Image 1 (cartoon, rainbow, N blue to C red):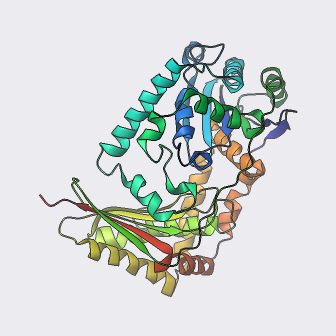
Image 2: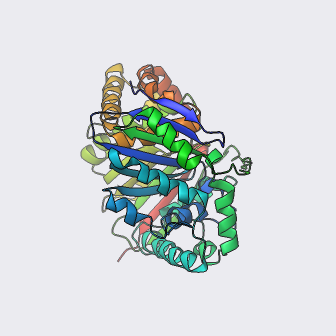
Image 3: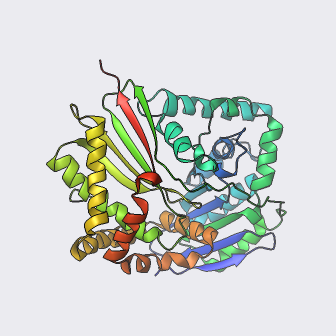
Length: 413
């Protein structure tokens, strides 16, 4: 059980605090309810651009890193299609440093043409290195528009096209910030050797005077139901061919998320999982193969992807995956196999909660989704899943018309 206390400022900022006296440290996690799905289709990559801009200095503090490093702190951030997360870890005795740094950049960044140009170059270089000039790097640029035709999940967080960041104006960037970077669009979670009341006082002191902002109501086009399979075949200069099959599933907040998550673990979590055992060890068709969920706030994807061994055709590889999926659809799975997967899931959840930083991040995400206390019910949701529910989920998900396939072929030398 993770104990925590909650508070909300008048400006809308939600605060969640988990005291943990087993560590001398503290984590300050600030989660903004904005991601790539909130972008203009003609100006994608802005959510990720801000992950960089937020470290480029605020109106009053030219260097974010320097004062934090002086008090023994570290920081980082990440962007998803649904939200943007910033975190700081530091000795709890120096907690206030994190508060004045985070509050100052929530109030106003140092918006100049120079700061934008610096971070623009960083993001463009990242786009080139990770997505254009790296083997298999363009897969997200291919699979997302294949799977989504209407919903903004059709582009990755880096953006749809490099020109969107290249042509972004300072005015557009400022508008994005003041639209989404607001206290009433964020959750602040603090975990570590802290006193909840003291944290609430610090929150009022440093964040209380930041005004609410007019955060636009989400009006995202929903993806229509897929009625037929779509396939894309490309050739690339890579060492081995690869196949990715995406199936549409529901939201992270849907009750069947936990069923689907266990189903993905049945397929590929560990050396005795079905795809690993049958297709890597027994038949040696793949050098690696994985199944996982996107875990998105809007209806997401169940992905199966594998790198194919030399001499194996793409058709043989794809057919072998469908055979394993159809086995679960037809025969279900023994209770003992499901229990093994549940035990491993429960162990992973317990170990992940040892980290005070993980607890801060998870509390923030659950509070953003509606209730931080869901963190304490998570294991129970997995425990009650039945083998019959797993089989029914497989029948719903693993349908040809519910799939998109990327055949990523190595060019024959």
